[in-house]
Length: 494
Image (tube, rainbow, N blue to C red; front, side, top):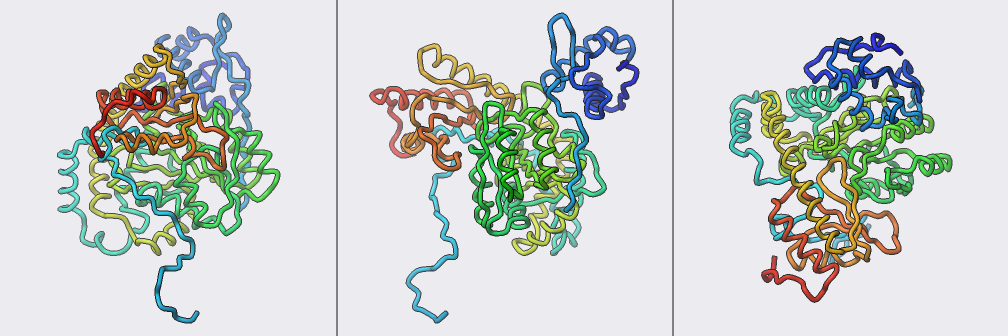
């Protein structure tokens, strides 16, 4: 393929990203075939009248994403493992004296301390609330209170405030590559947990199968099980969900939904490759399975530009995409959103009306104004830079412990807000013991579907506290895990 055959779409994004996108399109459309060698960077630069360094940056971006492979002395080739082909669209009593309540499905209540009550908090998805621009956002709350039309305070707009839906749609197009589609819509909801519950209620009948990874997000599983789902555990490895095992389970029949966190797998932080995404999508279309893509912290990606969501390339409309502002703002804002086929959104809106009619209109309008002014994305850039620094700081501290002989292992993630640490000893009871010492973390046994012989991993969030607290918390954790006699003295209580 000659470089002049590429079509670069003018936009405000840097030139190297425009070129990278043009090459992606060429690969997906079949103009570039698996294992095909590309022209040299010098030829690209000459033909496209572009700086050679710009071309090199574009090629490096595609290598990092998995579209291309670089071979010493032989240039760049299209990744031979990419399954390039068109995705196929899938067709569609007597009264008693009250002693105690008799619930239909008793659910365990777990009293827990507020996150702010721990001296050291390694919660994996917790943003740093100290650095949120409260005064700036307060101005948008005031503006929303003053300028929102009175009609918006009544019932209606179950799917969310029009201006916020518009801003979210524009943001998805601009920042996440999810372009406008005539048969897709955005719906605002009270965080991603409400989104998961609505999706579960809309699709699951008792006994339906939902595929989830062996290690996964417990609140999502709880929503599925509450609606009567039978959860099917799919194996995963160091690269994410195992496609062979997923296909094997599909052949057994009955799987209706598959739930994924492909950008930063929860809890292991692994990014699912382009190859596996395409393979999984093809299987979902073939077997009529709906994909639930939970993209809970898309922006916080540090190794390269984050891979675009699966929802960005969804010709069969199989993907229900959801995300949240809780990681970008604070959980109390209670704003999440769903992007899906129009008929799905209509069904979800009908269910939401049964639950709570609509979201907080003032908060919705304030966030819409914040996004429209560009202040939201400025805050996002600051947070991405800060969290990247905190990731590097935690990695350096953990490497220091490794150098001292502590038997810990980890892989530096491409992004996210947490690390997945192997401590080479059982972690059963570690969470509870350290909580009593004022330290919050999560352990592998919380995330596994079924039983594991000996859980050995911990999930450590790095975003929600400063470097000083991180170091002190890690010291306490290491002393507890590997030297019970030298636990530092922490104040009584938490």
